[in-house]
Every structure is written in C-alpha cells, then in structure tokens.
Length: 616
Image 1: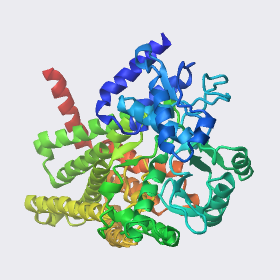
Image 2: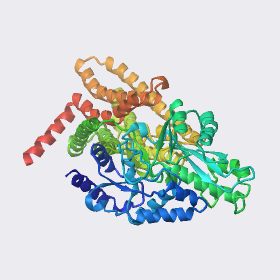
Image 3: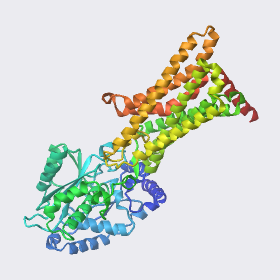
Image 4: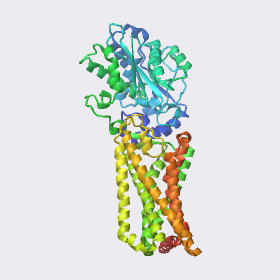
C-alpha cells in the first residue's frame, strides 16, 4: 500500500513535469512533498550493480575501454522492473578501481532507457560488503536537496572538488585537482602527479583553506582518492562536513564539471590545439576561467561580452516567511486576511468616490488615486508571497522579479507624489481658501495627477533598467520576501552598481525635498488652525488634516527606517517585519485611517453598501 501511494505521487509528478527530462530533479517543487514522504518510509531498494572484480580491473588498468565494456555487460543483465513494482530505484557503484567506469556505464545505460538517476538525491544506500552481490547493512541518510528545505545543505556553503586527467609532464604531473566554490563558481587548481588523498589534502590547504578560509562543507564523488580514512580524519579535525555524492553527475556536479570543461578548453586553446605545456599555462587558464569577459563569461567563442543576467540567472530565491510548514500556512492565512481587507477597503473608497457625485472634489479625487496606488502595491508583492507560503517554495523568475521591482517602485513613487499633492490640497484649502478654485481647478488637478503618474513611471523605469543591467555573480538568493533593489545590488559583482547608488542618491534628494514641503505646509496649516476662533471650525480642519498626516507618518516612518536603519541593529527578522509593515500593512490601514474622521466618506461608503445589498 505504501509503495502504491508513493508510486501515485511519482506518476503525478511525471505528468506535471514530462517536459523536464534530463533536468535536475530538485528543481521540481512537488519533490519537496515526495522527499518528506520518502524520508519516513522503509524503502525497498532495487540494487543495480556495476561491479567488476578488482583483479580484472587491475588486469585491464591500461585499457579502460575494456573495463567499461565489462561494466556495461554486467549492468545490462539487471532487470530494471522497478517501474512495475513501485519500488524506489537506487543505484550504487563498486568501491574499487572499476568505480568510475561502472558509474558512467550505469548512468548512460539507465539514461538511454529514460530513467532519471537523480532520484538518488532523495536517498542513498551505504553498505560494507566484500563483493557487491547484495546489500548487507543498509541505512538511510539525509536527503541532499538544495531548494532550502534542509538548511544545513543549502546551496552556496560548499566547495566542490574533482580531478581531471591530462598528459604527463616531464615533472611527472598528470592530474589537476579542481576546486570550485558553489556560490560564485570561483575556480582554484592544483597540479599533482597522482590522485591520492594526501595530494587532495595538500591542494585544499594551499588553495582553499589558506586563501578563502575553512569551508563548512566539501562535496566530491566517492572515488578512493576522496573516500578514505585520511580524508575523513582531516575533515573532522578541521570541522568540515565532507559529503560524497552517488552518483556525482546529479546533485552538485554542475559547477565543477562546467569549470572542468572550460579549463580543458582553455588549456587546449593556449596550447594551440594540444595540451602541450599545460602546466605552464595552468595559472593563466585558471585566471581566464575566473575573469569576466573571458571564456567563463563570454562563452567558448571568446567574444568579449559581459555575462548577462538573462543567461546566468534564470530565477531568484526569495526569503521564506517561515521555516516550518505550520508557520508557512499561518503566514499565508494572515497575509490573505490583510490583503483581502486592503482590497475591500480601497475598493470601497474607489467605488464611493467614483459613484458619489458630491465627492467629485479635488480632495477625494486625489484620495481615489491614492487608493489605486495602495491596490497596486498590494497586488505587486502579496500574491507571490502567498503562493510561496502555500506551495512551500522560494522561486521567482527573472522576468517576474524585474516586473515586481518596476511595479513596486512605480506605485511607491506614485503614492509619495499623491501624498505630497494632498498636503498641498490641504494647505490651499485652509491657508488660502479664497484661491482654492483657481489653484485647484479640475484642469490643475488632472495635470498634477498626470505628472505624479508619469514621474513615478519614469522613476521606476530608470531604476529597474539600471539595476537589471548589472552582472550578478554572488548567487541568486535575496534576503527579502519580494524583489527589492538593495537586495539585488548585494548580488552585483560590478563596480557599475555605483550608477544605481547615484540614482538612489538623486531620488533621496527629491524625496527629502517633498518631505520638507510637507513639513512646511503642516507648520503653516497648524498656525492657521490654532487661530480659528470656533471649536467646530478647528475640529473640521483637524478631521481633514489628521488622517492625511497619520498616513504620511506611517508611510515615511516605516519605509525610511527600513532603508536607513543602522547596520548594527539589522537582522533578517527585523528587515522582514519592516518590509511587511510598509508594503502590506500600510496600504491596508490607509482606508481605515481616512474613513475614521471623514463623515462624508463614511456616509458615501454606507450608501454604496446599502444600495448594493438592496439590489441583491
């Protein structure tokens, strides 16, 4: 029954992801739930063995093709009937000298039959047996999945290592230890005469530990030059977690295999079509692989172009609102409730102002535009956050991130512009009431609204275009639950981010100018209001100004503190709370704040609601 239930999940995944053949399995979101289910089951294992006896491997040591052929014959005798029985298919390979040939043969053989061996990411089998005829002591180990579920194994905290074989030099060197940092793809190389554990440790200490510090994790295949007691003792003494991938093709080999191919191509190009003098060219080739504009950044054709974002990063990883499934669902419900309240409140204000002819005044016209900006900002950030919380994912596409940045800055800039215009409206109505019809006529209001929307569009377009023209080389993980320009700038590896900082500085000056205008206007307003002799007149003036002042204070205090707070008190939880305040809570509270003291607006909303209920 358990096998049938698991197989049902597998079939549903295959139907939903039939076009993903050949791609890494951990990119599929449904595997998060499958992995959690598989982790708790006692899984039946189909043992596919590519073992070739050690004597035969030594006998054929100088002819790897015959060993490979023998491994193929051995593998082809296995009846791969796991699809019919509903068993989880797990492949393992021999520990001795035939391991690499058997691994490659099994991988190719199964791949040709449409079997995705990356399912081995979910579970591995460790056993100690003299021959590989049966599994004697099998035990389950932690899954290796890099989507963020198991934080200890999250992508970007490891070095991936491997050996490449080259023609032997006069000094006897014929191997190169390649070490790639998992986040940035930075390559380090170390030539050695033999692929042994001692040379591996020496290369890691010289090229990684001395230059980059002690890593948290090192990933490799399970070859004998990596998987032995000397390596394990050294890693334990340094507090390094050493992970062996079976097969090495699937979980984390992308970076190191890609760099290995680039390194060989570069060495061959420097040797004019051969690997002649590769040891002398190794340092230069490594530099070229790591340098922007070279083979690593411009492609194998050597065209000097920068690594573009569209080709290097296809998606970003947003900050998860919670780690556990229960908290994720709780956050989903809370955000859903807040967003529905915001949609209802702003929608009622828009409908009441649009349908109520007595509300067609400059004050309510600008209030309608402000409600539109609140609706837009809620619809920009909240839907993706709700989707990620509900489906337990963190991904957002590159184009989706660019659209989110553009729309967020567009509505953010428009809201600040309308808050400034509404302050001017209150200043004119209280301080210069006789000139109100002249200064704030219908044509003047339309021009100011058009200027606010146009300036916000231009402001957002400049920031978005400049931000997404920067090359990004520090991963794709954003420390925010939506795409934000400061978080994207942290991923930039180019000095051209100074252009964006200049734009931000100019924008800050404009925002500060608007803030000074708002403060000056309210100083004048309060001076006039306090001189009004009648208490009723003062209350009417305050009922007009205080809601706007509360909205401005909430908007400016949360957004300013979020971007200008000292780095000493900065933390992911505080940043997340502040971003939720100014991007979600503030647009939801604005309708409530405006309707508390405005009797005309409350009456119009009530008439709208009662009229709708009477019709239905």
